[in-house]
Amino acid sequence: MESLKFASLAASAPSPRSGMLGKRLSSPLLTIDSAAQFCYCKADIAAASSSIPPSNIRFSCRFSPSVATATRTSNLSIKHWILHSTAQIESVITSNEDQSMWEACRQALTPFKFNDEEKDKILGKAFGIIHSPYWGDERKKEVPKLETVNGILDYLRRLSLSDDDLSKLLKKFPEVLGCDLEEELKANIKILDEQWGIEGKSLRNLLLRNPKVLGYNVDCKGDCMAQCTRCWVRF
Image 1 (cartoon, one colour):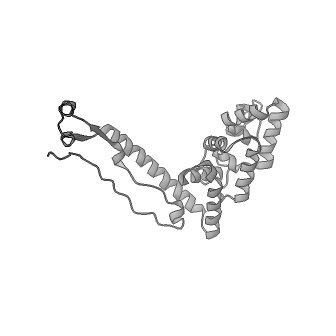
Image 2: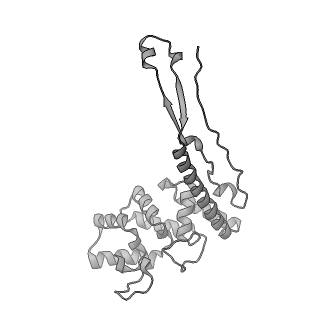
Image 3: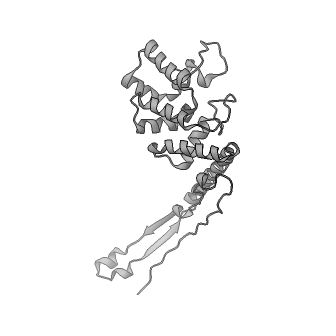
């Protein structure tokens, strides 16, 4: 009886990162090259039709170099971002209290089904820890407070945004969690209602399409103030 023939790839995992955040900010850094394998199962139909035992059906596996290269490049890019962003976060979270606050804010994002890396990216961008063009150089780095994050999430839910809506909004505009609830979010929703009559379903559709409107805080009226990412002229 002829044995099955197959080939496989081995993937090795790097050693765990050390540091204060340890497991809490650990990331799946395995490069799984096995995902770049293409297995082609070739059954000898003639053999099957002539009642040759199934053991004689041959399987072969081939490796696709182009897919492997693309996969490795993507994995290396993800690794680089994770290592870089984790280092930025660790530079700000310097105490057990900071770590507890960060983890609590992570948990507040659990309903939106983000993984840990996505949660870190959202919080990092919202609070100036990870660079965001939206803030420019104006945003101070700070450890987020749970009451701040929950306050904004609760307010957005009151605008008839479901958790699925909020997941999409946070992916497009994570910086919303770092905006001022009273002076920006609530004030801008009032402007949209009173000046443009945008509310209800129209408001929901607008926020999903252009959530940055929640953080607009200047209006240059055509005379540029070099704060284009936060200017009403973009509306």
